[in-house]
Amino acid sequence: MATTRLRHAFRYPSEDEDEPDELDEEHQEKLIADLQTADTQRNELYRLFTLVIPLVSALYFIYIAIFGSSTAQQRIIALLSSSSVLCTAYLLLFMPPQAPVRHGNNTAAHQRDAMDGPIKQYLAYLSAALATLLLLAAVLSWRRGVYEEALRQALPAVVFGLTMFVRQQLAPLDLEDLQKASARELSSMRGTKPQFLSIVGKF
Image (cartoon, rainbow, N blue to C red; front, side):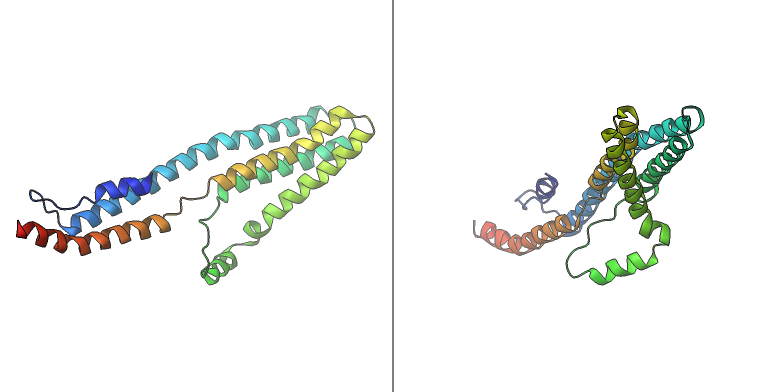
């Protein structure tokens, strides 16, 4: 749809109008900037809505750890669960997905990873490990017939999986193909324009 809009922006010159190529380039840049801005705003809105899930889960587990735990084991599991969902919330809020790296840009990707601190490099693995550990505890609780605890222990894994899926969908819009397509469109116009004017001149 965005490419179609760009194509509408580049009209072939007629006898009554002859727009400079510079205006087309400005229109192209403005349209791409508008698309990027709209995509960023939409991603921020979805990110804030999704953030409610791990934050509410964290409040629930903190409440369980303080008021709803009758044994030390239950309190430890509640604290681990709250840590897991808080890590998930941190990943969603402060570590948004990067734009996809294309083939041939592996060097730039490695440089970007090298600039990240240990939190950005390992927090996702730590959160996944906590969620997996709690999921295993949920399986054991289920086998022992403690179904309420099993569901509670499985909740961090569900929150992690759902949040990471949504986070991946919020990757920035890849405009490189769009920019290349619009550049080809503009280049084609520049080649067609003299031919069109020469044909019109014959009449």
